Length: 527
Image 1 (cartoon, rainbow, N blue to C red):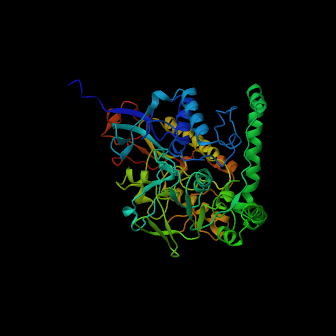
Image 2: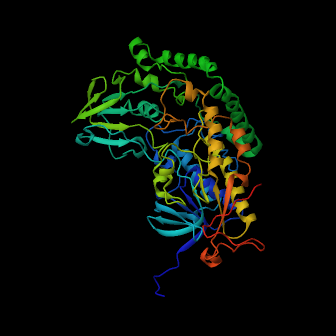
């Protein structure tokens, strides 16, 4: 064999993405004694959304001690709500602390991953080469691919155009006429950060947001010293933050009318900074608070009240050269356009690259709406698991809690494969997926996200909420603690393939088991 001809690499687990989900999966694999894995990352460093979003003012709206792994507490958080640079540094620290760097493959964007039913493995093509894996864990996250609306004439705009998640740090905004498109979580951080710098700032607001005060402060040296000396205090702090948010869930999921009191706080927050009745009317939502994500800022409204800021209460509909025209006909001149228009959440691009057992992509399978078993397993995609999958999002707490629950599920998933023995795969039964999602959607009907009177990024094109979890994080942890084999079909390698064809990391069928069907499927195992 020529020196350059190498045997194709095979790993037990391939993780896609190195944000919180991907790094968390990598740590959990190592803690389970699994070292035969890689983390495929399209960029040149870890961090995911906290690497990509580096816009001015970028910070988290979840308290620092709750927005971190329970197995990697950080006593050195500098603020109660940490900025992007601190969160990214934390993820780099986690990477080093748990020895993950040997597993990282940078510049390895996944182009295609297809299930090979004959060899019972995933064939993966990346920007840096190909490999195979027994199990694929997709941890790309819903906030990884920016969404820019199709605006007529945008290509003719002579100035600078970029999305908040692809900030152009080489472009100087000083004195420029800047148009901010959108009023989501990114926009309310960007606006007060750039307002003092720009010549004129025009905010195109399709829908106003409910904004609560952001109770951010520096964490004192004494507090940090206490957390270092007594780690239990960090756990207590995290537990208190968690408990408060768990108590809030009922209002979001069962009693939305109880959120009226919160609306009054938000209105007072606005009234303290916005004295102009006309502007206040533009900024007051007409839907129940919580229907869209509640935003936190103590600087957004004061920035909008400044003389160099204009609020257009209508979305951008057309670009005519350097003139931007809103849906209501309002026109504004701009030198730069910044899109704070969110991400492909319900139509994640990675789904177009994952090919299942029947030759269909995950995107095709989810054409009628995303759905999976316990937010992790899609029917027809054996040994494939999603971290932050359908209906695992939160409206009021930390996604790290949900990620860690899914890591529990992943760990038990791999244990079940080991117990079954041989070259084996688990494929979620369509009936189990339907049952799970029917229950989720039934519970969703009474939540504020479905009844609050808004259109949010939680909803897909058909108006179905395929994003948010309609319960507490404690409940989600309970339902993902163990894999129920009754919800899966157990697949085994076709007899003709034999152990060798299944790859060096897999063994043959366990003694006493019957020959596998030529289709690679068995009747399944009940727990």
